[in-house]
Amino acid sequence: KVYDFAPAVTSVAVQPDGKRVVAACRSEASIAPLDGKSEPIRLPTECELWTHVEFSPDGKVLAAAGGTPAQFGEVRFFEVASGKSISSRRIAGDTCFRGCFAPDGQSIALGGADGAAYVVPLDESIAVKRFELHSDWVVDAAWPPDPRGLGKRGGVRLSPCARYDGSPARGAKAEVVS
Picture 1 (cartoon, rainbow, N blue to C red):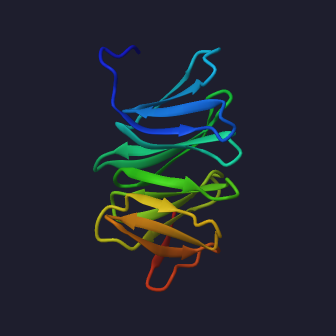
Picture 2 (cartoon, one colour; picture 1 turned 180 degrees about the vertical axis):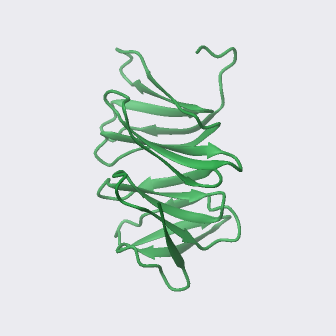
């Protein structure tokens, strides 16, 4: 598909080794080599909007998160070198937003428009963890440098929502989503 007009870019990430860049543009992501020697890899989806793209710490996996407003939130994992889909998880009833990979690269934390933060493992046999803590959108979720906890941000406040072992922080409610 060729666009008549350049689509809005909603998220950009650079591979840790600096060899590739990925951009989320509406309903697809595009991985492009920074040296310009090969064609970009386009990753179309069934979502209306990708809101976040991120490379794993080792740069071998790409996570793309987003969804279709008021219908579903989704995260897809791709093999960076080929663009092949590794797994796809619909995890929420509304769009997913920003987040980041865990330091070990085996899961990603994401915020959601449904007021929850999610920890989504790459391995589809492991259940998604959902942390309901917010009365409004959770626009970001992050692992701290010392990965004993998970933080989420709604508005301007960052709040702890889980310890690294998956147990909820004080006052948080955790739920496993299949």
